[in-house]
Length: 555
View 1: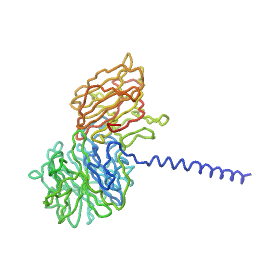
View 2: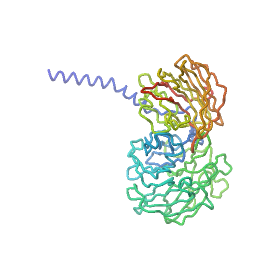
View 3: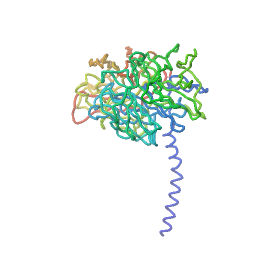
View 4: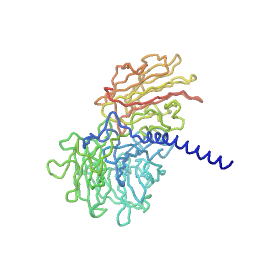
């Protein structure tokens, strides 16, 4: 009898395995399917690529290659999760695979929006089987996070050096066994800028162990030199550093046979006759086939600091970045170029933008404006929606700019349309709960449903100079009898934004007022959703967002 039951169990197990295995494969396939943006793809599908490779605000990019894989991170300021981790096989097609920072420290300090604070220009490196990211918080010091897997989990931040105004750190593990750290200073906190220093780290890379030495003063030739990246090649120590300011500067390279200098100086890329302003701050990487490339950003105002890829070559132990048309040893950016040779061809890929909210966790493209509370949102797999519960605006907030529970993502292209469908269920014991779509920056605007004593109203919201504390202006558009609504914003060239709404998702009505998206603090505008209230009881209303989709203007 026992033998029979074991046989039956074995047969049942084989049956279930055979039945379920294709389902498991399909589930894994869905999970691993790479999304392709409808609004920006850098791969031209003909062996060339176009710049920017990422038309999104991945500010101050740094990148490395480990084996056949490239990894990139960037500044994230107050946004959480922070320190995005992007992955590529060919330097053109990138996906977002995780974040190294799930909460900003100190936790209480970042429980409300701290615009322009938090994570400034980081560096990513691979050493002894681990990934290291050094990042600066200009108000607290230089931190380190580590991981075995770049997709995470990452360690809690380790304070490598405390201090105000210490920014843009980058380590170097020298072949003599010593470990060094190069960094710059933020004038707004330190009272001085335009200088580069080198300090020694302990062997673990977790602590600065000396006062450091000044290795370059850029006040005369290279004002606002910052963002240094440390490399060693052919016996030279190299410091790649941008200078001249974010929108107008150039890429500088310093080199020396001694880590403490003196350093020779050379401008290796500037705008030249190209249309790419301020091309600088980024990362030198090599392909498995031995090619050299440089990733950098361009400041594009409301669109943020978007990422470009430039060819690079070495001449007489100096790098030349971009194309040197006049032969003076200084390159300028390219807009279209042959893709890097990485030994094979890889499929197109882009960071995700649209979200159907079908997964059990929030898409990686989303960020909050402060450390999130657990009660702000829940994924509802039963009906494939994202539920945002209303949360009271902080007492310090004069408008939505001061609310942490605004869920946002980067502008992914110059022109695009965002549409979302939501269902609003306000708490009957509360008034003035509000939910909708917004384009957020130092000034912001949006469309929302708002609960009042006599029902739900569709309202247009706008706060010009929100970053200066100006109050939000609200205009009633219509009383809304349904709990469901479709909200849309059409972002056109020049970051011109046209909001519209629909009851059925087919016929949209424009509100008639055009809004020009504004920069945030040190970053571009963002688009997203929110659910807020101005009072507090022991419960909350909520909004269910069915999906959030990016399309082109002609779809």
